[in-house]
Image (cartoon, rainbow, N blue to C red; front, side):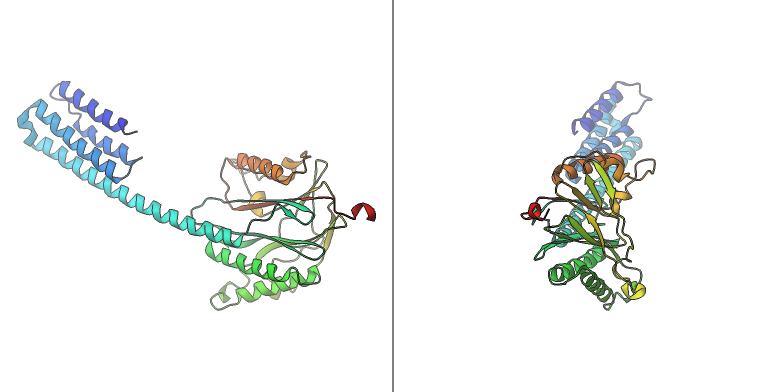
Length: 358
């Protein structure tokens, strides 16, 4: 890349010296440091700017030594010095901004990793794969969340999405995840657990400094209880996108019979939680996801048709399924999502005692 501005300066000097006296190509030398600034730092840009000034002086000397001090060449040299200095300052500011942005991204990603602990590959009778896709919008990390907790007879999972972005959303997600991890193995029923989570979120949002957000900040979530035995999942959907079950290549969306309002609105809506149950047998794949998947659009504005695109998938490997889904989703949007997205694929393995029960 450095050869490009150097070759440009050499070409300008040679052509200007050989050209008729009324043709002046010296002003084109300003392009050399400008090109360099597009890919290099301040030091290399400054060096090329100095060489451009030297090239202008060489042109003047080779044409006529007395022209070096003429008003025309002095003005061109002054212009090169001014432009070169401006480009060096620009490069310094650009590098400083890039360093600051890199640090902010690092802090944001670290905060996200602390909140979203990776799910283990095996949880009881479940094979699990999880994937977090960032929208890559500088520091605009989202409030997507997920967690899993073992109970005495099965596994409880939560997946959710906080309204909003940034560190406030991450804080709200951490609040809910902390409450879930602390209570999921202690609450006797799913209704009691969700009631406790809604109360925790309402209490957290009502803390000093958060009162102005009452009714405006909420968390959509789906809380699932998957027993080790039985082949049935119990779920309470709090305004979250419905899960999808893949069985023998057929995708079935599990719509809640009576969805509850998002968490954090309990004091306003006073919901009565309804538990939905659906089959989830050995060999099935259960897909949980956030709205970043459904709201992904292609260049023409068409939303991602999730169930249509995964219909026909017959493998039961969660990792392979998520790799396939990730590629297909990114192909649909042209490589970059407009919002963060979380996807969790769960496979139910046969559990000792299932055959005896049948």
